[in-house]
Each structure stands twice: as C-alpha cells, then as structure tokens.
Length: 348
Image (cartoon, rainbow, N blue to C red; front, side):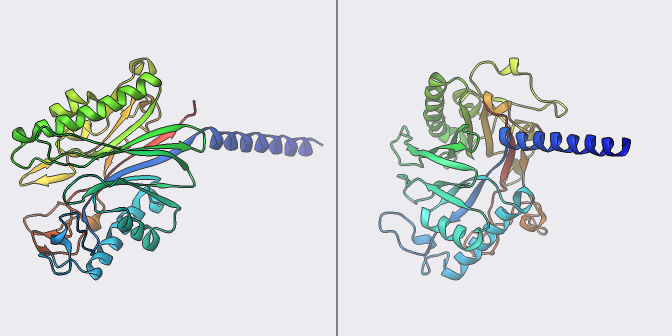
C-alpha cells in the first residue's frame, strides 16, 4: 500500500512539473537575434537604375552565377551554424542588392526553417540595401517601412528598415535594420551623415515610446561608427549596457524609455567586428530599449567568429575571410563578423 501511495505521489509530481514546463513554454519565448554585413551580395543581372556594373559577369569582379551560388552557400552555411545549428530566429543583413537574391539563398540553402524575407529598396545608388529574415513559425509580420535619411548634401543613402513583428505570445517587436553612411572622405568629414541617420532613428524611437513607454525595440546594423561615437552615444542616445557578473538588471534602473547598447562591453575591451588596417572597429551592434533589457540574456551578445570564416595566415590572419581582396576573388564569406544576442521574452 505504501509503495502504491509512493507511485501515486511520483505520478502527481511528474504531472505538476510537466504542467509547469508547458506553462513556461507558453509564457516565455526565447529568440536568437543576429546581424551580418553580407559584403556585396549582388545578383548577376544588370539593374539599369543602379550602379551594379562592378558585380556583373563582364565587370571588374567577374561576378558569375557560379560565384554567386558559392557565395550564397557560404553565407547560408554560417547562418545555419548559429543558434546551435538551428539558425537565428531573426537575422538583419546589409549590403544586399535586392529581395530576390536573399530569397534565392533562403529557398536553396536555408529551407530548414520557414524564413520570410522583408526587404526595402532604398535610394542608394549602388543598390546595397538592408534586409531582414525571420522565422514565420515564431513571428507574424505586422508591417514594414523604409525610413528615409536625408543627408546634408542630399546624396542618396540607404533607408532604415523598420519591421513590426508579433510573437506567438502576442508581444510586439519593433526591429530596425541599419547601414549608416560610410566614412568615405574621412571619419570627421563624414560624421554629419551618420548623425543625420541617428536623428531619423531617434525620432522614430521617441514616437514609439510616446505611444507606449514599454515598446520593445531591437536596433541592429553596421553603423559605420562605434558605440562611443557622437552619432550613437549622443544623437541616438544609446547608453552603454554591461552585465555585471551575468546578473539581471534591476527594473528600477530602466524605468524610463531609453536605448542601451549591448556592444559597448566589447568596444571597451578593444574587440571589433571589422578590422581596418591595424584597428578593430566595433561597427556591427545591437541596441535595445529598456523593456528588452529586462528580457536580455545577460552576456549573450557575441561577435560570432567560428573557425571556418577566419583568415588563418598572412598579414590578414585573424580577420574575417572575405569574398574578395580588392578585385581578386577569394571565395570567402564577408569582411565583417556577424553579431548576435539572445532574449527570453517574459510576456506583458
């Protein structure tokens, strides 16, 4: 009799614990968010309204269908390797010519997941735009828009892609994919252009916060500036966020709507996602609102550099293995390392 009662107690405990885990699965949703500069992901078709002549079969890069296929395979291999070989739930990309070339990669090499492509065709003269893919099993697309950036000299540049997603838990996420103007002409001479981009983004963030102070924002991109530069630290007003010994932040510390830069700790430590000459630059970043800080898996922000995308010899040892070195075809991946972060959405 005692044995039977003991079995019943074990069964009851199993039932309770099973119910608990099931409830947890319903109320908590873990998402893996990544960003990657795809380094000139062009198709091989001439676009008459874009300056894509460099990346055509008869262009200086001799960009052929075979080389494109190799590029798509390489990029998909890296993407698939993320998140314990499951691929990211959300991936922002820049230096992408159009939606079709990303869709080609998804259909051919990333069909293990139900990815949806969201793209924005911007005024950029070369047609290197920003794109987002997300797992349709975890999110619904509510809306998307391109935020136009007007530079002081009126030169056309990439839009900021704003996509609004709804999670299975009915949480709303505002994702912003960025590729801010380059430092061509010098960092100081060009910084006004990145300040202009930061102003557009900050204005949009303030509108969302005014409507809902608890808005969940995830801002990612290649900002062509580092976390300590004026455009990000002052204009965008993205404060440094550093996990202390992996501890979760105190909610009281993040009571007011604001933005926090997850890449700041790597920046402080001298790490970077892109190497220019002898200096590592922390150009690729993930910035979040205070509501997302409460969901952030502390310490998970990572510059992702698996061995197979690292150059292992020569003067560029330790840097990302790119597709080209100048006009010389190398058959690699990108000149940037991707970055990622993990979040556990805890409901309303």
